[in-house]
Figure (tube, helix red, strand yellow):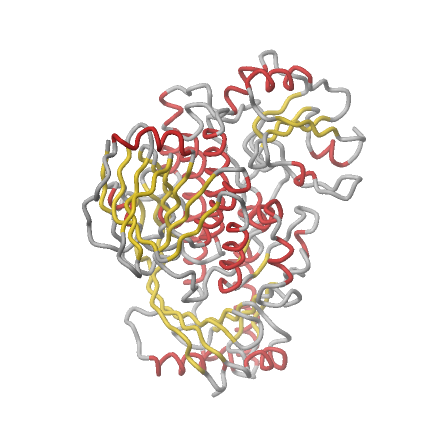
Length: 597
């Protein structure tokens, strides 16, 4: 049995835990063993985007969840607006994608255009516009039923909270602080305190997931260290209101934009849209915390004009490139910022965390429902940690590329020299920064290439480039999207259990019978026309898709031992010891350093 006192500094992005250590009051862990074992409940600490996504994923699968967060549900600062296509596919499955697109800020038709300019009233150097809005998928249309979205955190977090709380068995308890927790082979006990009254109570769960942010008290209480590089750069962000700015973009920069990067001053302030009307966020590279009067000057600097500005909030932040050494300690798991911290260059942070939530969610559900094997939960770290390493490394690469752009006041000159420098700078920006703004590979192309619960078939792994997505049913990849004759996406048929996609004359019977014998939920999706695009895209007549939409196995005919295949996919077969460490070894070799913190 392990017992931890949990406390965390305020200010995490995924929800906070903040309290002095407190001895557990009035309960014996031994007396609660049977209650915990039978509860089937998951405790989630932190009601940020990742904690709420995990609660939604579990609730959608019929698992009881209690989310605790010491805050009141209010979002204090806008950040993390870029929502990837893959994340929107999860929202589609949860039934809230349409609301996210049509009832959130910015407005549905606001263009996802990124502009590099000397200032908002200056000279355009280049822009990145792929025809994407919250309503239109643009260049993503052939790849997914859900294009990316750009959603203010003021809209996104309440949407996730509503979606989660409407599911049976999901309870969100704001104003509740985790004080201590203990775990043993039967489950987890968490002592929590009501922030308003000071009253304490003990919550029982079979598992606990820490979604309590980068300053996670749970991670630190468990002694799990971050590996990588902390504070590669320091920054300051300002949430402000400027009613004139949108009109300036229309008049001087060719139309609205979600981001405006300026290159005429050393601080290089850049502006991000918040509500698509009059609220914005400004960020600058800075080592020391400034006065708020400085913030107004920076807005004027970025705008290139002394527009009216109201400062609503401001905070410092740092860019990191770190991943937790391990994602699990017994019955306690880490997810989101508690497991990895990234530069906000490309919008990878919350999206990587929501990917954690989906991967862990289906595995917890399978385990609690009795058909997941003893190795299934171990595969969470083995699958998701390499993805975190991949994404923190790519985000850091984007930051380094951005840092190479040197501001120059000559860029604003209206002579031949200014025109030449603007042309050269625009070409350099396109060469070095394009992969950040059209990152289809990062969004849709990640795969679980060393997973112990995917069955390799010996075929070459498809390319994994940040700005290129190659649809593939290679085991471990996201199963590709294609529209079916009934108007649905093939992705709409995945999720509750395993789905066997069948084309041609392939016989699914051996796998169906084996699944029935193992108690594994499996449905068959038969593609009506074996010559159609769907059958061609799926590459094999039989493709077995996991509950999270990733391919677990594929073949030209049923496997000789279908039970063995299903046992591997559900974690009933323990991998060799060297295979269990593959995720950690890949992470180190992938470029995360050994700095601990």
